[in-house]
Image 1 (tube, rainbow, N blue to C red):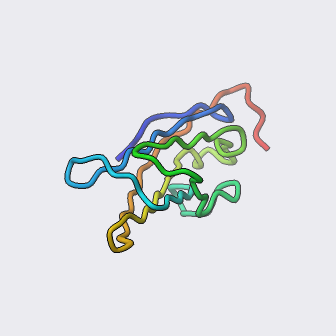
Image 2: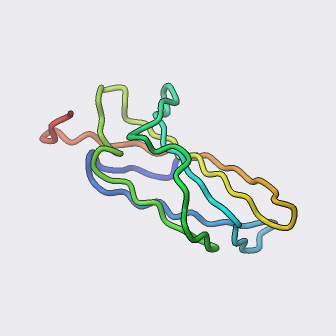
Length: 109
């Protein structure tokens, strides 16, 4: 599922909302990873980044090199979110993609 379009080397905010059976859920822990959609390589060392204070919603703000396009084929990103919640330290994982719109006057690199 696509969650939208970011602008190259700009700022892009992703809102994470947690539910279980349609009810809001506050996880015990949340981590997220940003990777290239094409080959799953990690972007800008954004692997298993912890959210310090999980709530029923959290935001992930990506900017600058998180949204850098290195080749014409490098416009897709995937965010993978892993949560653990009680009772029983149960895991719940989700993954979504977004596209980066290249801008003609942005210098790559």
